[in-house]
Image (cartoon, rainbow, N blue to C red; front, top):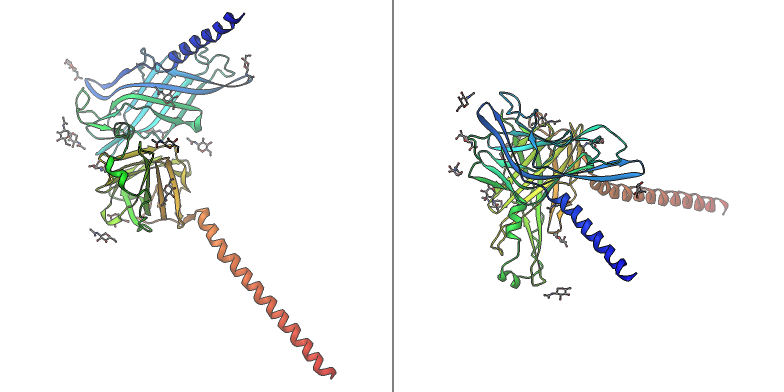
Length: 417
Ligand SMILES: *[C@@H]1O[C@H](CO)[C@@H](O)[C@H](O)[C@H]1NC(C)=O
Ligand SMILES: *[C@@H]1O[C@H](CO)[C@@H](O)[C@H](O)[C@H]1NC(C)=O
Ligand SMILES: *[C@@H]1O[C@H](CO)[C@@H](O)[C@H](O)[C@H]1NC(C)=O
Ligand SMILES: *[C@@H]1O[C@H](CO)[C@@H](O)[C@H](O)[C@H]1NC(C)=O
Ligand SMILES: *[C@@H]1O[C@H](CO)[C@@H](O)[C@H](O)[C@H]1NC(C)=O
Ligand SMILES: *[C@@H]1O[C@H](CO)[C@@H](O)[C@H](O)[C@H]1NC(C)=O
Ligand SMILES: *[C@@H]1O[C@H](CO)[C@@H](O)[C@H](O)[C@H]1NC(C)=O
Ligand SMILES: *[C@@H]1O[C@H](CO)[C@@H](O)[C@H](O)[C@H]1NC(C)=O
Ligand SMILES: *[C@@H]1O[C@H](CO)[C@@H](O)[C@H](O)[C@H]1NC(C)=O
Ligand SMILES: *[C@@H]1O[C@H](CO)[C@@H](O)[C@H](O)[C@H]1NC(C)=O
Ligand SMILES: *[C@@H]1O[C@H](CO)[C@@H](O)[C@H](O)[C@H]1NC(C)=O
Ligand SMILES: *[C@@H]1O[C@H](CO)[C@@H](O)[C@H](O)[C@H]1NC(C)=O
């Protein structure tokens, strides 16, 4: 009895490992989009697509790696004179993963990612209650590179589509669009995750002697940043005071904290304005900050922050990013305003403190902010003076009534005497 009961978990473990191995072993696939003889997009990547789908008694998750048999789909195009480059990777029984590119002349980016999955494919979606073909997309990808360079990202990066129902995890990625030749450019734009992975942000030994509590440099000055589009008009406005809060833990169990105020007069703003997304780069000698804004029909929000900073105590730059954030929510045609201090948590090592914020990341007209929507923090702050004022008015009224009653009584008293 005993030997049988121990052999079963072994078998389960073997089966489990087999299934796990089968699912995570994403192949590196090579794809190329051409217009006549000239190549415009080239990609070499592994991708794993996870889809949550419905079965009769609940939901299941299907995990589909891009197989070696992936082909360049018929919707792919170099964009011609007016359109935009589009890479469609077709695989399996009617599934596809597509990347749409855009550029402003000095940078290019993956503007959006679309996944089409076919629920009637029973090998990937067993017992699915629907047989439909489903299309989901995201306008926020975090894939951005300098023109005439190859975007390189070996790290695993996950893009979430359609409110979390579909995830695409890329790894070992090399991609280039708007190509000049038929080979990848030698010059590369390395993704932030790879930069973090190689530097791993461990302070060098001298950092151990610095006190763990930093001198906090006071409230940062408000910077007035803007982005202009190709025809020279302002398309994004961001007025804000910014303070970086970097927390590093060294192997010696010490945490080192750096609080850095961004100095507006030493910071340059550039960026990109697209239909459904916009990007603000704030560059200075020691810090580079990127803000990604997303627009969904009429609502916008800050969906990603990426940072790279040179710290005095460290030999390697600190870098991190998070592209699934949801801060500074506003409505199209209005600006977002928050005078109160806010802390935007990016990850456990980095947060951004903001002061006196007014932003309008989409459709700025005539270089000016439109009507502001106040954050709830400001409304809360407004509430205190209102309550105090009301209380004071009430007190004055009570004193006045008491005085009048008192006067009437004493008056009456005199009359009876
Ligand atoms: C493509 O290249 C081939 C051979 O190099 C050449 O014969 C052909 O004319 C080229 N086609 C175009 C559209 O340039
Ligand atoms: C749904 O049904 C399948 C097979 O009928 C079963 O294996 C699974 O445990 C069920 N799931 C739930 C959540 O009841
Ligand atoms: C996706 O991006 C491409 C390239 O910029 C653009 O042409 C297309 O309109 C975008 N699609 C959506 C639905 O935003
Ligand atoms: C990319 O290369 C082309 C051709 O050499 C050049 O015209 C263009 O200015 C370059 N773009 C950038 C941003 O370097
Ligand atoms: C990549 O990340 C996704 C989501 O975090 C995870 O499910 C997957 O196992 C990771 N793949 C590798 C190779 O680390
Ligand atoms: C790489 O970039 C440098 C600096 O931007 C430039 O001078 C050089 O020509 C580029 N090399 C190639 C092969 O494009
Ligand atoms: C910086 O971040 C740390 C850890 O999250 C927090 O304890 C500390 O209060 C923050 N400091 C400032 C000035 O925001
Ligand atoms: C680090 O701190 C943990 C818990 O505070 C402790 O258990 C551990 O021994 C410490 N390690 C070193 C190297 O001091
Ligand atoms: C930038 O502003 C700070 C504080 O406002 C000031 O001390 C510094 O001199 C200014 N630097 C330059 C280059 O203008
Ligand atoms: C910031 O970006 C610029 C341009 O991409 C680069 O030259 C500079 O080294 C970067 N600074 C840091 C601290 O990474
Ligand atoms: C856009 O907003 C609608 C309504 O709030 C929501 O159902 C939808 O999932 C959102 N789309 C994206 C891509 O976030
Ligand atoms: C945009 O920024 C530039 C450079 O900082 C500045 O000269 C210009 O006045 C700004 N425009 C607006 C509308 O804020």
